[in-house]
Length: 159
Image (cartoon, rainbow, N blue to C red; front, side, top):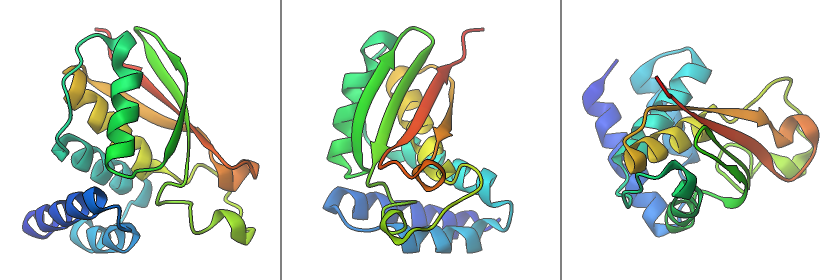
């Protein structure tokens, strides 16, 4: 793994997100820096970027959905619809994010979940805001279901 290249790519991604610019091509560069194992690599990359983005602190897990929604809008990550926010989980739908936005209207279908980058990004942002370790997972991908939103769940580690 080329950490210097990865750091440069993460910096460029952050700058592009702030400007509302595309980051899809940067993901390819990150693959070159990291190697193979795509799903885990994209999750890791998203998580690292999420912890790198400046966010507002929110220690109460039940209030995180509002703070997370603001960060997602500020960095032009996608359009979000919050479904559930408890002490244990945040569940949400998101559309227009970089992994699928150019594929949705082209009839492309995926067998499994496709948006591990966004799952990692959400986990990283929530961890940074809350100080609580968490894991995020895509529950339903629009490339699987044909719906306009991908569904994600963020689970807080309680032990």
